[in-house]
Image 1 (cartoon, rainbow, N blue to C red):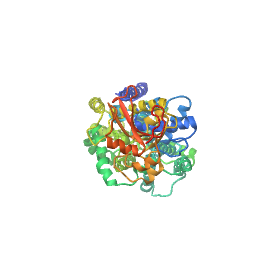
Image 2 (cartoon, rainbow, N blue to C red):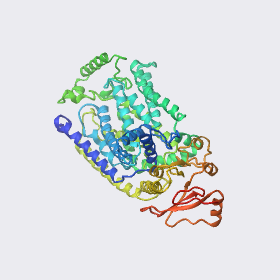
Image 3 (cartoon, one colour):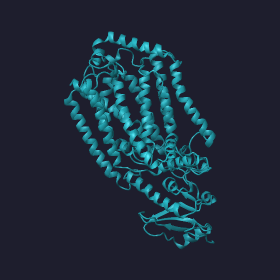
Image 4 (tube, helix red, strand yellow):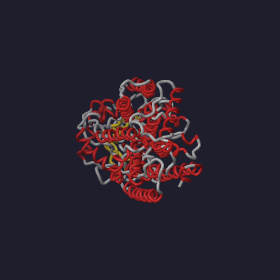
Length: 596
């Protein structure tokens, strides 16, 4: 059906389908619509930067308790002009989630080349139905922003390797990703390793060319400037969260948390559906010798002359002309009826071995790293999302190869095969999305102690109510000790100590490990907390329907240490009472000072 593949109809159909997918994603994400407690940590830093010019959790205390510098900086800049991070974080999440759908289509077109084909849009149509992908368009975190940067870097790297982009820009994109989350540094290193392997296998050279040096500098210069600022401002090369997680029993983290986290991600999103087709995909596509894409060795993509962009352009044109003479039917068949502007992604598809070796080198080590650090304590596989589009891209191409099996794979499709596959997979995806939505409406997840979206939503919302109550009633110099340092601190605007080490250098670097739950493996000893003399100790809070009445022995013990239990009941809080330990000799207005 050439009308779907070429000409004006094709050019109109593709944006319409992508817009349909983006709208579907936004509707799916809106059904969750929550902000996690961790997001309020970034909001706190953004607020202090925007309002006080101090990139800190507590004013005057330079401790890097966030892991998403660029995301927090963006929120602060918008807060400076009056846009609240509770709103902008949600809008950014939806926007960059939609951008990922566009990028996965661009990746497909870059890989296949030739005529437009409905198979090119399969991954972009399926991704919005994946529950984890939609969930983390919400949440207020940097997940979708980081994922879009990673995928943008992948697409640019492949386009540059094929000579279809004149400037080596992907290094700069990976630098932005590394300034958004630390894992961006790992992905840049893996990309550089792939480039080195391609040079060795395809051109038998080790020394980089000028273009490759520019690519490295595109990463090193901005990231180096950022690292220099980080060390000079905070005193350490990594955020506190790294030091909280560093060390410990990695084998225990892998077995108890990491591998279950991986299985949970695969099982919830039913990614094993593609496994049978993958077995057919690899031998047929990657190593098939009769494919026209193997006219040259698989690891020798078009490489412009080093530092000479005009010569590179001429070389690219010469190569295209020679390819057209060598394979007139294959190449000319792709361009029939297409205007010159429609060839922006190049004439021939990328060589499969080059593309799939790169994607495997990104996905497998990245997923191994996530498992090794224990994954996350939140459900729905947030840490795996940066590579999820690449997994679906692999599934899309596996299905195309297994079901179509044409000789000219970039040029052919059969509606009787594609349409049923799309309907079945999309139907199953939507059905699975409804199931996951019901699971995440519960307060507790039934496996491995992962927190559901319902629990994360309520946890943060309750603490916003508590924080607002404190902001309106206690002195502005009140000092809190908290175990969840996000919503309650952001809403109260009060100085706080996070007992898990988020904003305390001693806890992150010196405190012994007290657990193995991801992100909660260190906790300050009670003796250390008492030395800080917090006015309210809410890290031991009791949240229940009635005011907490401690046993007499417990009350006497806390009184000897200078504290007693007090409770608050903000309107709308359920359970109604939130009880903390209050310092006896501190006048907090609603709770006057007392003697021991």
